Length: 470
Ligand code: HEM
Image (cartoon, rainbow, N blue to C red; front, top):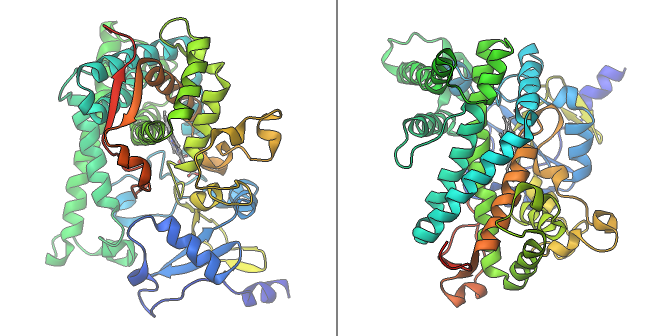
């Protein structure tokens, strides 16, 4: 009886679209989280569901639905949707981001990432402080190239931590390898580009057939991606053999005799996970500081009080206002508006609806962060929401609960990212006054970029050094 009742349950409400392609034609290209929030309001309920060809998509619109499913039922909701082209044909299914949570290797990755990223706080602080110094000097010398300096900073930090490798100033071969891998990955994952993603049986057609161009392309990318992944790993092994390796995520795990392939894949995930995300958050921070001089001034005053010289990692851990600014940056301009897609391993029911096995589940983090009941005046940038006599207990919930993902896939780099962001923010405030090039900027609405990671679209800003002769 229970089985019959379950089968009669409807799918969560949402647009139905066309017979074969589902809602493909009306899928939003930019800022999809806003359209999903609109659909949530139109169709009602804490969940919206629709279909893109053969794929069922479920959007979770409220923090309750997200916590109930992705956190409390993490054993069911921590898989990843399988992309035929990228995961299977290009051979990326074993990467940290894509591996099914039910594979024993997923646990191994998580263990190595946890211990490898928290191992030696002293080494990490030294790396962060050294690299923020390079960033500040770059900004003094060539402020107009601030976005390049940010990219270099993020890459340098993670290459040092992952491989003990110091990047050279321009066109570093390790960075080129990592950037080339990211580019190929973006092409291979592009939604709607590969028919095989929607019609998996095509994977079995022979590669020599004229219509199997995607298979030949995939095979080429697969060997290129494998080759690029080897570059830093082999370098660390050579350094270890020569006795010149610096302590790093890779060298530590290899010397503890962890499985080499597991170490290689985990280290490769660090660059992908750490660069665009931290750059996005820092970019939004810079834009918001330019637009909010009073908040900038207050944050700077606190830094000047706690730091006698250039801010250190220890200083920023004691900066409560700066901590509130970071929370508000992550709430106002979430880096991952839809986190990363999860998938459900077995059919489930929730709130009277049926959720078929294999459904792709997207938490609408943007909608939660802008829920006016949780965050009054959600489109106002106001770090004070996280201060007050009772700190976060004051009623406004800590956005860290939604900024870093969910269940068994929660971001393993969170603590490193927070430390790095706080240090970069404090150093920017300590060394520079940040303002928009044009005062008219104050009157414009901020715009956001779309993609897996999002940030405020940059506008021209001025970095005015505060301490002469640096
Ligand atoms: C502002 C900075 C960052 C933000 C906002 C962020 C956020 C996220 C989010 C939302 C996810 C997806 C979780 C899910 O699927 O539920 C994720 C996954 C991940 N992040 Fe981060 N992240 C940041 C920085 C970093 C850093 C610095 C690293 C590495 C040092 C990192 C490594 C990873 C990895 C490896 C995963 C995949 C986890 C898995 O699939 O099991 N992230 N992150």
